[in-house]
Length: 247
Ligand SMILES: Nc1ncnc2c1ncn2[C@@H]1O[C@H](COP(=O)(O)OP(=O)(O)O)[C@@H](O)[C@H]1O
Ligand SMILES: [Mg+2]
Image 1 (cartoon, protein in one colour):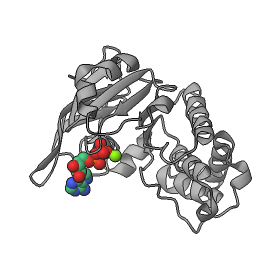
Image 2 (cartoon, helix red, strand yellow):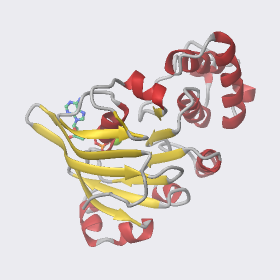
Image 3 (spheres, protein in one colour):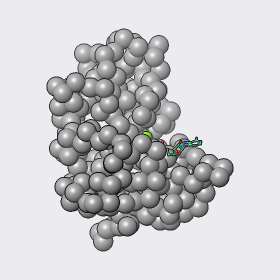
């Protein structure tokens, strides 16, 4: 099964393989992401979802395969190059500078990620604070934030780099129901701004409110792809989830 579509994708990956020593984590993964779409990725723990994000974002070299973004071949480019081209990701374990304020974290992301000068970075940070609902928390140290605001900050740091494509890795974990609704609202608002979103999430009811296409991965392969409800109803997907605990 290949997650390949017919329209011109913003991101295209073909035959991506990634091994750690003898452990093969991604097997010939083909994936297309369409401009402006919200694509979901699900799959049991260890399926290779986070590794796929690392491959797309350039966190490490892949073992083989080709990835292009807006028609530009990314082979040999680093995460910082891809960030400049417009690919941003959040991390499953957030990585803010805990001793810095929210605003300072966004300045750093805008300056180091997008290489903006100080004045442009200040403008970008202010804009991102407004878009993510963090304006009231601007001067608080990241370490003092509650969980929902920490999630918002993780999204905000990615946004501060000025992405066209944002990769969200399990951003919903640990939130209460009302916090999840706030997070879903934030992600929906980014989509309505025209941002392309790929969201790995095990909290299915939150994911299903946002995504229009779904991929299920298992053991480093794409098991099923298509309309979200069809994918979740797929017999192979159901089998892959047996013994694990999707919500
Ligand atoms: N840096 C690494 N070194 C060795 N093995 C890794 C590394 N990163 C991930 N893995 C292994 O790759 C597999 C897929 O992991 P991961 O991509 O994190 O899956 P998922 O995000 O779907 O839970 C797991 O078996 C994991 O232990
Ligand atoms: Mg993961």
